[in-house]
Structures are given as structure tokens and as C-alpha cells.
Length: 98
Image (tube, rainbow, N blue to C red; front, side, top):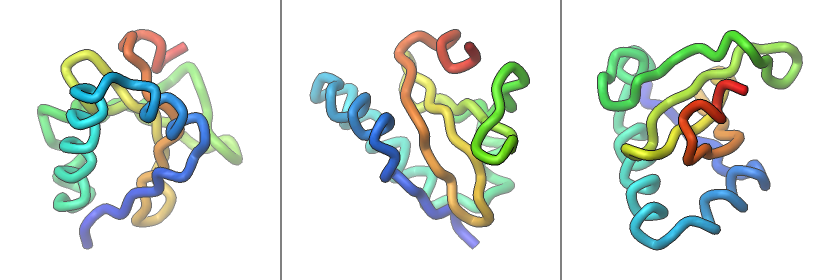
């Protein structure tokens, strides 16, 4: 089954909508790519660079993950069944881990 996306987090939306047009479109292109993938493909995709975040926890103490959305930006998200719930975008890659 392909990955489903939840883009409804207000923090994610605020950050995404505040980006310059080119960056917004680059994020959208990555999201379009993700919804065509199976979960195993997301984990293995060298362009997305899916990584567990050891320094933070998500809702209900669950694991958070970082993935590359553009050359400059990473997203923080968590898996909820078949849904990838996006929480925020970070133009500074290190910011995703703090």
C-alpha cells in the first residue's frame, strides 16, 4: 500500500505557506513523490534520507523521523499506520533534530 499524507498540522502549514514560491513547489514535488511510494521504498530512498530522531519524541511518546524535502530543507514527521503525519519543516537541517 502506498503512503498517505497528513498535511493538516498548523505548524507545518504555516512554515510551508511562508516559503518562497520555488521552495513551496520543491516541497510539493517531494510530497507527490512520497504518495507514489510504498513504506519500504520511503525508508530506502536515498533522496529522502529517512532518519530517526533520537533527541525528540512525537505524540504519545512515539518516534519522530526526519526526511529531506528539498536540498535545503527537512521535514519532521511520524508514521501513524499507513499515514505519514508531517509536523514541521526546517530550512536548517540541524533544526529538525533539536
